[in-house]
Image 1 (cartoon, rainbow over the protein chains, first blue to last red):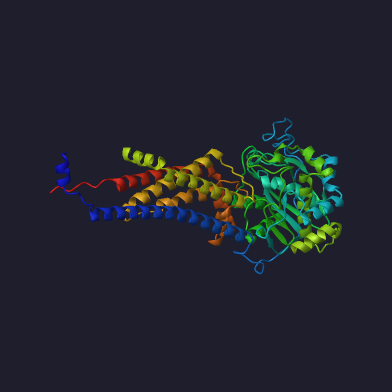
Image 2: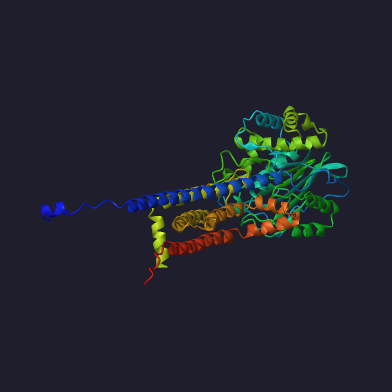
Length: 374
Length: 167
């Protein structure tokens, strides 16, 4: 374009309305971004708030804060015989073939021999004392103890003049599998087992070694009742739900369980299960009653000599012989953890029997009672 | 479907919305983990295949990103329906309540007790839910994908250029 034409042509002035529109669009874009980000933050905040509410509600509910209080509950005082199970079940024989860790049922349902049984029945009080002191001074590696959300004070279930320990669990359940070691040690302080049996948690629940109170119907859904326990201080009433052990956790419905209990015609067990129903707070297995205390879940997380890592539980890789050897001469995380877990149950039971058993005079047990308020 | 695929491509080629998806995946995995451990005394005991868990949180994070994009697009018209975004957290939350060992009941049982259900009904209902863990998680993943498809459809409409009127 010639210079003279260029000079003659008027310069274009920016349209004020156009620049205003651009500013407006920029502002709107910014607002949209802020609004969208606020939406994301809002969604996440609501998500976590609702989850926290749910978790807190769950904890409160398990502590029995919601449904029923002890002023409404009546204790039971019944007489009758307890169930003594069969020593063996022909349809559920002892398995003598070994398998790899995580998929083995070697020796399932085999009764413990006399030296193995003695590890439980004749464990020195000194071990319980040492473990109890470790619990009190916080030097255990594992979490041991019953949280307030797990514990509820209830009237006793008295049979033949003695308070009771009631257990409702499943052979398929990993927490029951871990808890039975501590329970057996605890019960051994108030009486003894004439026999216990080799058991496992289910394949889907880590297949780790445990004890059974009685031979288990390990391939079918059923209910095994009773144990070979005797005590002058307490009763032990055991309900063990069974399901195929090679699958995962399973528990029969309470309707089915009650039918199976009632089919036995044993009034003590019928009343004990009815008592569990009356408490109206079952929140999973193991579900245990120790005199005046209902404990929801296991009282410890003791799964071996190192911490569980998501899908790997160290206890899966122990044999029964190794477990009992560690109990026999405790000097590791697992053994002290289980003895301490037993101490927690012992303290509850001692309180319920007014400390009449010799174990109740152990300083650690007295201190645990005092510290926990049992 | 071409329109939906375009929206999907726009979402996952935008650094902002990819960041939102990642934030969602991390947040929802943490939420899932929290629900499992709070029901299992601190143990992350997942009894469904772990790849289903990953698929669930990934699909929830993706749904969150798509919902955010669609909301962002709809805001041009000064309206934004955000309910689908809210749903993106429900599936991992409910998944976290059903995906662990049924030996320790989750918040479902507490809610049922609170609503007045007795122990027999509560245990029956909760145990029934646990017996369908894997199908439920698969259903939640499918639900996330379905809502994503729906959200993408809304995105197509929100981004459509209105036809000019002819005089």
